[in-house]
Image (cartoon, rainbow, N blue to C red; front, side):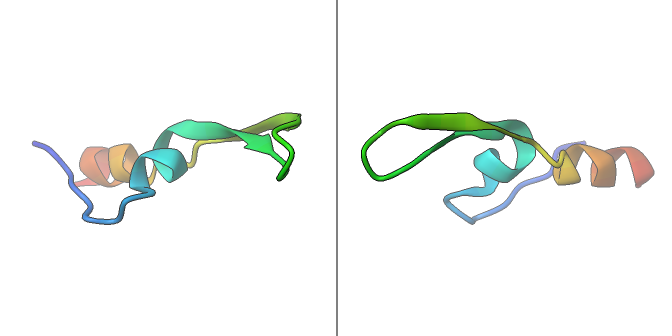
Amino acid sequence: MRTYSTAPHAHLIEYGYIKKDRTGKEHGFQRGKHVFMTAQKRF
């Protein structure tokens, strides 16, 4: 089974991303929520 999203930012929510400000300076990592994997397992 596979889960899909048409949202262009869905992979960022699923897997996480490095937080950066407008100058490009890094401010940590936002952990992914794994919403698609969780939905797949629950189904």
